[in-house]
Amino acid sequence: MFPENGKIWSNGRIIPWQEAQVHVMTHGLHYGSGIFEGIRAYASDHGPMIFRLDDHLHRFFDSAKVYRFKMPYSFDELKAGVLEVIRQNGFKDCYIRPIAFVGYSRLGVYPDRENIEVHIGVWPWGAYLGAESLEKGVRVTITSWKKFHSQMFPVMAKATGQYLNSMLAVMDAKDRGFDEALLLNEHGDLAEGSGENIFLVKDGKIYTNPINASILAGITRDTILKVASDLGYEVHIGALTVGQILTADEAFFTGTAVEVTPIREVDLRPVGDGQNYPITRHLQKTYFKIVKGKEPHYKHWLTPVY
Ligand SMILES: Cc1ncc(COP(=O)(O)O)c(C=O)c1O
Figure 1 (cartoon, rainbow, N blue to C red):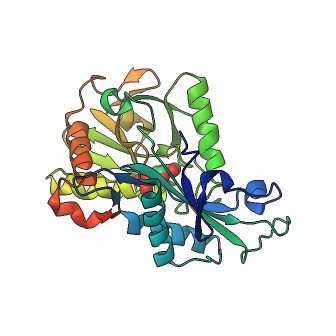
Figure 2: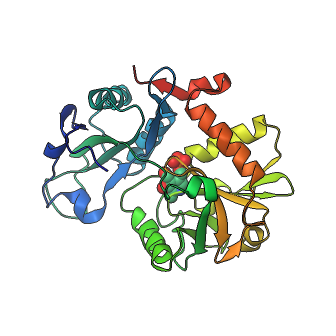
């Protein structure tokens, strides 16, 4: 999966993929003191285009701000780094993973926030939940692990350590034969998947939960909210209950990795008729047109690599 012979942007320099290494006593490895982003570039008629790059980098810097990291590179330097590392690898489409973490200096929990390493890895990555997931939809389970709430961790930050919560959830799901986990929040309402936001469809209307439902403020979620309204759908943002997903006509995940993925089943119960997702399909098709540069109205969301 990884471009072993490719290149990576590492602390301001492009180096061979194999040479990007850290010491085992690195703070970020011991305590999860890191922040990251997940971004995608798509092939288009005008070469690779990165979807909502500025928005992802703004969230990256916001995550750094929450954890009070002194970022050694500016927004513009990282943006240039993303473009350069894709060019040097020659990818037409790829996943982009910027990460910043507390480096190797001392190992008390109190971090050396002046010692931040930044790397940007890029590699081709297909459908996150498997080749058939976009077409057939995925089977999810409501896990007993709860999503942490904002008094435990800043939910708007995309921090590496916070993903142990997601990891427990997805392991629980996969070990029991499901494709993905759905986590409830501290109120017992739906929060999100281990790496995705959730939407429901009922009677032709679209529903998703608010930022204060202990969710990451997904950029794909924001995209779908805008696109769905532009397409004329009625969109509601409010708490979502388990009962609502069990009685929904359609449900789907959104995220950079999963894009727009239908949810076919929740705990062995079909969502809707378990087969047809006309509104999800409409949004999914539109999303793919947008990211591939085939919808002029949304071109401002695309950054050309060349
Ligand atoms: C926990 C979680 N929720 C939601 C998302 C979706 O966010 P985005 O659409 O910005 O990729 C992600 C992916 O980054 C995630 O990890």
